[in-house]
Image (cartoon, rainbow, N blue to C red; front, side, top):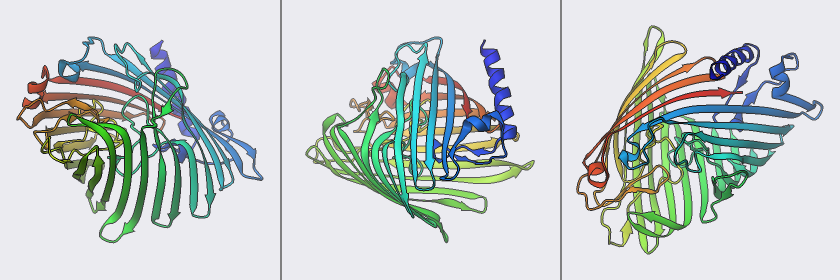
Length: 449
């Protein structure tokens, strides 16, 4: 049955690909769909519905499905429940987008995240049916007001992301004002993140966490290409860092410069955090560099790159300050789909290679080396929770991670990815856990309509 299902998907996606021209976005509310009355194929008719051509009122429909098989050997360094067979995660998203002229739109998206054979799923893996997005836009000249449940995505996703890696994407109940003119864009937003819960239509905001942000981007600057400047404030009634818990009021100011020059690509970002954590003063920071060089082999693009970052950790436990960097809402698969550790108290050195083997097949390989920035601080999960506390271990070495992936694009609608990760445990992991090396494999089939 699965064989025939896969054949149907490939044939169907190939058919619509040959007849329809659409541009799908990572944020589906930014999809570009051609309004062409001469195109009368079935896919076109269900993709966009003309309610009133006179008032330019259209209803757009879109969907996507991601089916993913995952297998862990020694999950969480042999601290998790043993699973010898692996499990399947499936995420389905469907949206309806009503646009009236250029001044108003109402966007709604439903999400279904399910798991099969997962021994102990969490709400990010098992969230059968819920309202993922529901917002309206009102546009006046260069300003756009957006209110409601929505995805937020900024810069390199190091601080604010949609959490693409896990089975459930992240949304916020927020109000956002956007300004766009020529090469300048600026956003201001305020809201609460939405917490996934087991069950149907029961996701609610995390009322204990408030987020305010300003994000400005300028493109086409001489010598720099693109510059982004931002400010975020997060207030949490209960946070935990380095075994301390309390009220957190944290500000983040940062900047990112990115672009390309000839065959060289660069992405440099730095951020500083200050504020109050319980009775402690916050002083935390991060700095990252992502450089790569493109070259051609047989008219196909190849890439060699190098990433590195320093993310501060708490130096002295019982003084009056805390230096642990809070990554806020980073992308879920921060260091690969396995998502073993998160970006706090970390030094990372990360060379990588990307090969375009054919027009449709890409191969990537990367090697990560991890250390604790401070031996007196814990290591953290991607969601910011403590993974392992310092436990008086004096070792900074967390481990090394080797990852590889093949991605095949049947067409713009259908893709398949096969990937694997091997984590070689360092002395710190061996000091605080069973310390066994982790092997992770995954295969992903993604259909976008």
